Image 1 (cartoon, rainbow, N blue to C red):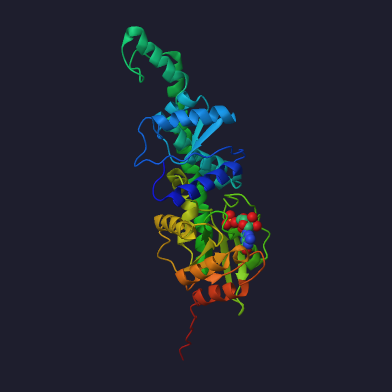
Image 2: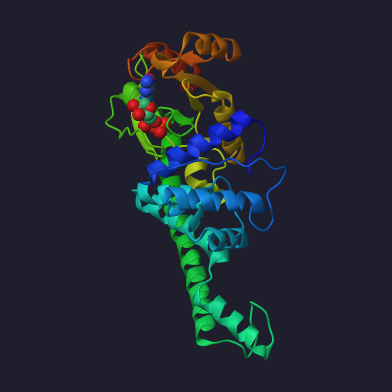
Length: 367
Ligand code: GDP
């Protein structure tokens, strides 16, 4: 099921395929279904489920990935009909975040997001057992009820309780880690070092630009979500003023709300910056859509009120026509190629111009 115009659906599906490859899958075939709204039972609708079943059989696929967030029952129904594992976009993104989280805080944040996704979807022995119980004439539906709890259902309840405990614990841990970071942040603001946050759609070239601007050795990967944990580097302006540059979490459209929630503290750091350098991939088929998606997330963490410097990257690989169109669309943007180093000096100057000037300390000595 896809919303909007055809190209949107196709771009979204291409991105989904790239995400799946990042997660280590081999993508066999794509299927688009056009509906005004998702089918409540199977998401894609009965007819399309048959098509999907046929594709699964002919390709020998072992997994179906749906571009959207499916309800627990839609997932279950699709699995029953296709006889293979069904994963939705949210689960896929969570999986990639899990693979890429490196810092202790990042790992805790991803685990929290995964558990929150998992909790309402938890089923297993308990549920099928209580269904059997219901079917044997002792009343009750899939949920069972008092006196109907078999050993399996007890296990499901135990699992749920254990997950809730773990969620509470992770929240506490993340909170204390946030406090440590806030202290560091406070120290930074005491020192009055201006901060620049590099934001942008995942794979736009944020890490490459950070490397270019600071000479830092940050991992650059042609994979979505290479950047998960924020990296902060120092840089100096041409007149010797110090400032910091931070890479942020790569944004993606339909970023699962569990991720936005779990990474809120990391994302909120963007909100403390003095300037947001918003990197856009000039070679992407729909850069405007990416800019919109990033601004949406920025707004969610209160960073939309900050000055924003739009930077169109990968100009070495962008065609002439697109360049002209983007220059008209964003006349104030800086056009660069992190690859070739083109436009980097201009970018540095633009950043410096927008940095707040240090307050001049005036000490008057009274006679
Ligand atoms: P991030 O996810 O936004 O941090 O993006 P990365 O810096 O990891 O870059 C993502 C991919 O884009 C990598 O394969 C880079 O080599 C590529 N890339 C980055 N900058 C440029 C550029 O200026 N031109 C071209 N052609 N590719 C680039």
